[in-house]
Length: 209
Image (cartoon, rainbow, N blue to C red):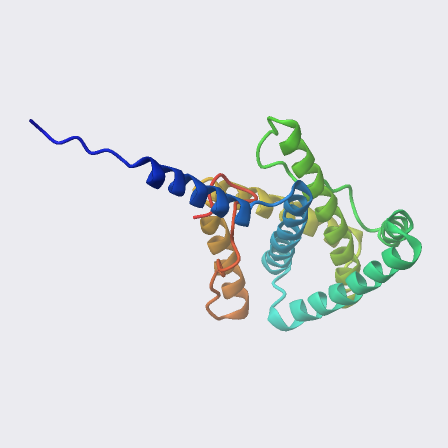
């Protein structure tokens, strides 16, 4: 007669408690998740923008650094304006600054939202992307002298780059970020690694790795 392997009740209960503690340690509020979606969308979009400028106009590392430096300046001004006058006024000022040179822009949805939660997350990503794009349009205009025609080309190519990133994340977000890292490495002529140390849950794909 074979021995039956049973799990003592105290052990099963202890394992459940440990699992619960791990969940509670890593669980985020919805507000924190939305912040993650905004931040990661901004990070990805910046790479997509820089890659678009590089691919379409052959602008290399040194001049792209000027674009990033200008964007950082405009970003700091926007943050201060938002703090002093409020988000609504700051957004209105930002929109007015690029009104004559920026075409309509809407971050592509990588998949159709199936729940209200996913719809809210997409809205948060699109809001962040709109702000980042406007800041970088200002930076392109100042650092590179880009007018409406060239800005339109970059915006369209940025949308294409983001869609390609989305396709890559279907195999796990790491692959999507690795593709972006290779692109940046091509621009700066150096190897760029993907930092996964702070990754806790996926933003764009179903899995992290």
